[in-house]
Image (cartoon, rainbow, N blue to C red; front, top):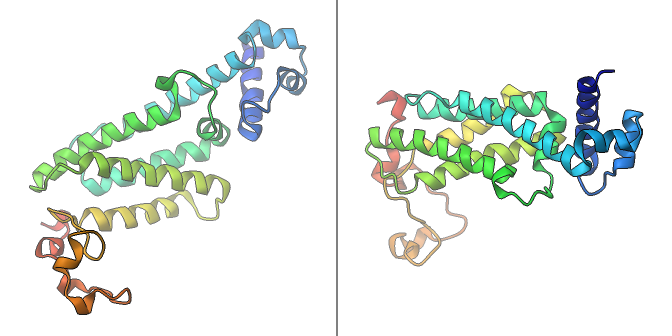
Length: 235
């Protein structure tokens, strides 16, 4: 086995171990034993398990970043397409890189916040924010809440993806459809000035007393006029 082949073997072995047990629970001895090499070989290539872990995380971050960036590259995408592409891109990454995804979402020993999974999600949220801002402006909606909507969308996809990674009982496409269905029916009926209807200081002042019961279910006739707006795609 060449030096490059040995390095790749150690990366594959390390990825599987870190994914299954987490960084702290894996030792250099275990990595060496799983790869059927001596401990000095691991130290020679990576300087220790910290170096091996850093290489694995960096590789997975680059793979996921390039996947998402390419997916969201079109500034003129329909808002629903943004959600569909983002959902499918992340779920495809999880499907094809199961161990790598588990490494990313586990607690990281890294002291560099710029290299963390949360930092990566922040970057993705900024891309989604830019796309949503342009879409909101075209629909003459306030962009004040766009940063939060972007975080909600990315968070919903990521946490659902984590759940699915452990319980893959539906296909990638079906799960993406579930995510899009929930997200899009919210995005397509956004109020220009969202407000709580039943809770909070201002809510009870605007809801008739007979409608303040927990059992009351508002129908479309009680929605604000701007909440009844048609799907932007049909406008």
